[in-house]
Length: 248
Image 1 (cartoon, rainbow, N blue to C red):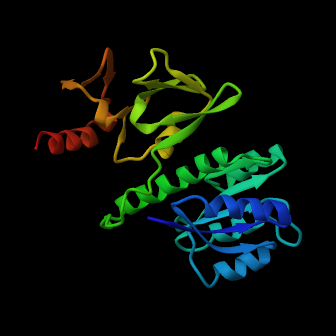
Image 2 (cartoon, rainbow, N blue to C red):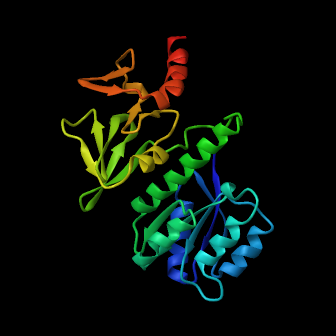
């Protein structure tokens, strides 16, 4: 699956950079670039796109105002926005219009890819909910994510993650290759959106498990190495459905 996306930014250098990032990302397809939110709106009235990468502060019509216009349209869940701006004070306002993510300029390709991966996983889940046959190749799905750990971005292979645990305002990402988990300042909900649903499952308000790393299950307890994870009542039905496929 490729996501059709457009870039909107009134700064030429910033627009060039985000277009470059889009073009070097295998699961994104750039279908338009605009220096004006008004021009972008005209395009969006004619064509559907899945993802908009957009600056907030622009003349005539701001990125935030365009987001509110799009939010009122039918099937607004088919188009998601990633904001990029040099002003961190807009972050909270961005989430009020249900932005998928927020990039603070200047941002690296790793930060861009992390946000783009979140978008990819969102549309994968949307497709599953609608029961659309997943006929597209899965090879374009990223095999790694980048996590903010202290003051750096750390590349983590999906195959290395055994489970993720909520810990106050952080998450602990347990890895097969390390004795100690990575501590990242994010929420378990954000991790759930970031991780591909065909490989990871939320089984408790405090846990996500990697399905490939489950060693055994006894009653409502999942065993992963030396760790034990409880399956809560709210997530039991989905997990039992997975188990029934596993036993077949």
